[in-house]
Image 1 (cartoon, rainbow, N blue to C red):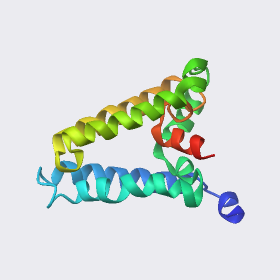
Image 2 (image 1 turned 120 degrees about the vertical axis):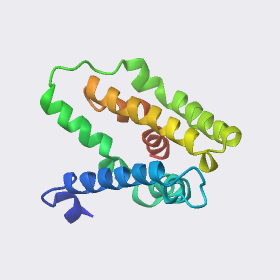
Image 3 (image 1 turned 180 degrees about the vertical axis):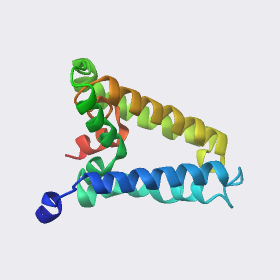
Length: 160
């Protein structure tokens, strides 16, 4: 693992690959049609990514956080906009409980809206979360989304 983490291009190359996979997934969602049985994007998102990324924390720790394309955007923003404000401390330090609640809220919403069978609801959810992640990562320094509001980051902190 140490050799992997010290390779030249780490974590940029994997982040770019994951960003490409996310773009491919988004394209699959948009072009695959509303029927989840014939939409490969819906299967990849809800059948593979959604269960496997949280489970990966048990096997690989916070490796996903290093591969997440949102952190790539945060690193680019840090170079381009070095004088950004910090995320408010109340969000960083009190955010874990709120994140557990929000993670639960997404789960309850899924029981009602059945995201895995509802393409418009899935697109709205991903658009909302993606826009929030990118905006907070660009506006706040220190990877604002990752440290304070990312549900997977909260899961990683909880398990650590």
